[in-house]
Image 1 (spheres, rainbow, N blue to C red):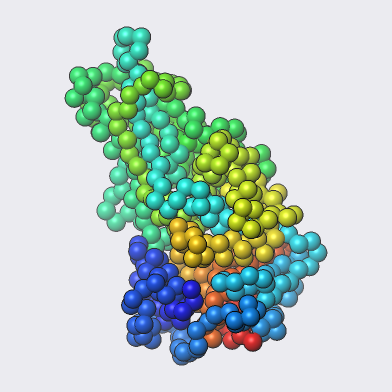
Image 2: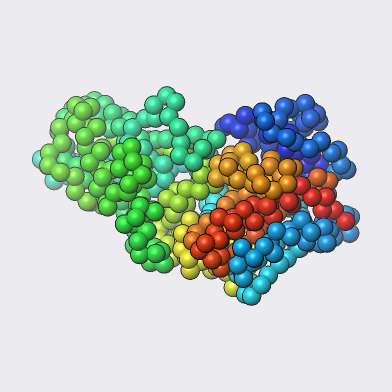
Amino acid sequence: MLAGALLMLVVAGGVAWRTGWADDWWDRISGDDPAATADPAAVAAPPGLDLPAVVRPAVGAQPADGRSGLSPAALEQALVALSDPDLGGHVLAAVGPLDGTGLAYTAAEGTATAIPASTTKVVTATVALFLLGPDHTFDTTTVLDTAGGGTPRLVLVGGGDPLLARAPAAAGDGDAGSATIQPPRADVRTLARRTARALRADGVTEVRLGYDDTLFSGPAVNPTWESDYISTDVVSPISALWVDQGREADSFERVADPSATAARVFRSALAKAGIAVVGAPTVVAAPARASEVARVSSAPLSQIVQRLLEVSDNEASEVLLRHIGIADQGAGTFVAGQAAVERVLAANGIPMGGSVLYDGSGLSRANRLAPSVLVDVLRLAASDDHPGLRAVLTGLPVAGFTGSLAERMDEGPAAGPGRVRAKTGTLSNVSSLAGIALDRDGHLMAFALMADRIRDPKETLARTAMDNAASSLGACSCGR
C-alpha cells in the first residue's frame, strides 16, 4: 500500500486543495494511480514557504518479518516536545506504522485513557462510513395525507440531513472553518418549489402543514454535555429536521427548536411558491399511507465526512452518530450510537477496553479514549480491505495548509507542514491530535497524542507543544 508514499511529501502543498484532490492524493500514496510516478519535486511550494530538499528514500514499508520499520528511539527523540511541562501531568501517545500492527512508540503518565475531545470525530466518521457506505445520502421529503377529507395535510419529513440549508447556496459562498471541500447542500426552498409544482399538477393549491422529526429519538441534548453548551451556542439541539444546523439565518446563534424553525422556513417558501398553507405547522408523525410528493438529497456521506473532519463540525458529527445508531441498533439515540460504535470497532479487531464514548463530536468531557484506539481506527480507514473508509484519511486537515490546521504547526520543524494530516481535539484543559505523518525517510505512520490536565494559563503554550511534537514526526528520520 505504501509504494507511492513519497508523493505525500510537503512539496505537494503547492497543489490547490479543492474538491477531488483528496481522492487523488490517496490514490497516489496507495499506489493506485498510474500517474504516481510523476516527480513531486516539480510541484511548486506555496509562496513564502521555506521547504527542505526532497529526499528520495526506499519504499516505506514494513520489514518482511512483520516488525515495524520505525525506530522507538528515533520516535522518542522526535516527540521530545511531549515532555513540555505546559502539557500538564497526563500525556498519552501512541505511534505505529499505518500499514501494519503494533505500536513502535507509546507514552503514558497515569491512566491509559484521556479525554479525546474532537479526535472523537475520527471514530464517528469511520463507523458511519463503515455502516452506511461512502455513497449514502440523506433525504428530506414531503408526503401528502388526504385521509379524512377536507384540506389535505402535507408533512415535511426530516431524514437527518446534517447539512440541510434554508436556501440554495449563492455563488461564491464560503464555508466556516476554511473547508477545502464544499459539498452541495440540499435546501428546503428547493424542496418547497418541487413540492408546489407536484401539488399543483395534482390540483392541490391549499394544505395544512405538519412536520415529522421522529427519525431520531431520545434527548436532543446529550446528558453528559456541559450544562451551558446550548445556552452559549456551542452546539445545537440534535434533530433529524433542521436548517443550517439549527442556526439562525446568517448567524452562529442556535435556535431553541430546530425542527419547528425548519418547518416555518419551509412554510414561507411553500407559500411563495404558490401553495396556501392553513394555520401554523404542527408536530405530527407522517402516516405510512401518505404518498411522497417531493424530495431533496444530501451530498454523499464521503463528502460530508471530509468537510466534517476539516472544520470539526460538532452538529454533523452528532447527526451521524444518530444514523449509526439507526443502522446498527435500530434507534436514533445517543445511547444506540455509542453501542453501535463499540460493536463495529470490536468486530474489526479494535476493542475499546477502558475507553468509552458518549457522543459523536467529542464535546463530552466524560469521553475517554486510549491513543491506541485512535491509531487502530486510522489503520482501519487506511486498510485495503475497506476502500469505502478512505474519506477519513483524505478529510484530515493538512498541517499548515487546510481546515483546523491551516494556522497551526508553524513553530516546529520546517519540514513538518504538509507532511502531517491530523484531526485536532480541543476543550478547556485538553489538547489532542490524531492523524498520519510521513517522515523524511518515507515511513507512513499513524499517531495519537493526548493531554487532558493542562492548566488554564498554559493552554495556548500546550497546544504549541502538541503541534511541535506532531510536526516533528513529519520532520524526523524515524526508521531503524
